[in-house]
Length: 354
Image (cartoon, rainbow, N blue to C red; front, side, top):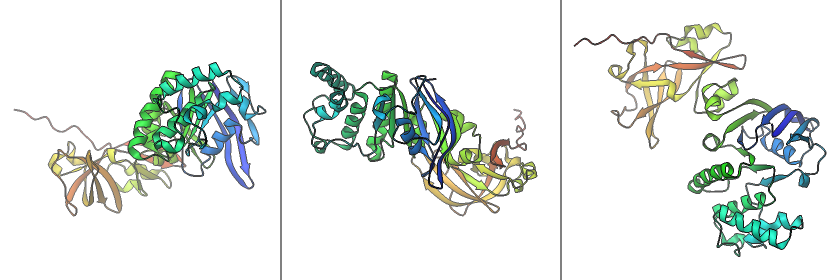
């Protein structure tokens, strides 16, 4: 493995920011480090960079234990969310900074900066100062500066947080292509699930200093290992008594069980619209929200409130309308584990004879 963290712990006073975290990353992977505020993401990034020292545990980069290696000697590029560019330096000098510190020759600096100007689409801007650039351009300069010394590992701490939504989406696509082209192992911290799912080859989900799960975005979304991951990834409704819902009575057998139901697990409509009407339960539409590509429904089912999606091609439902609600599946949460449960009441509809 290219990057390994083994049993790392870090506390600040009585607060344990990182609790026995271990993971490994293959060379060239783009990893999204995702979790709630205060979950330990930035601390892990700073430990990898050498800006924080772990209380225990080991960090390996390219097979070398680097716990005692100075940050500047670890072969790491760091991109901050606020760019951290030198305001008094031109784009060229900002990108060249790391190479200048390493006393590279002027010819080497010119060649490498020119290569990165082309790679990041900044050719023609090299004599401008940061205040003369857009937010997206400044972030590209920050990427180029981090890449200039040819680091082993690129760390990005909320790299798109200070950029507006449209430019952020463009930069996400650009970054994924850039990392794939360069083949450099990269870890980026983000609060944005869409960003992580769109960009990352793998995700690391952390909360309260613990690693909850590692895997591809698809694997984590479809097979969450813990209650936290099931509720954190994607949009979810929490049901406190899942056994009260038709088809899920056995879910109540787990002591203290709760359930997480995602919108795509719920089908809402008039009874004749459903493929399995016998498995549906009555509900009432409380709110309808337009989400661009679909409508989002807030539906009341007994004591529970669920979210569901409805296509714009279907006849709109109105607030207050009685509807049939079919719950296809749910994640049942018991003792902090998540188990997928399918609705067994779904049966194939009777064949139509012509």
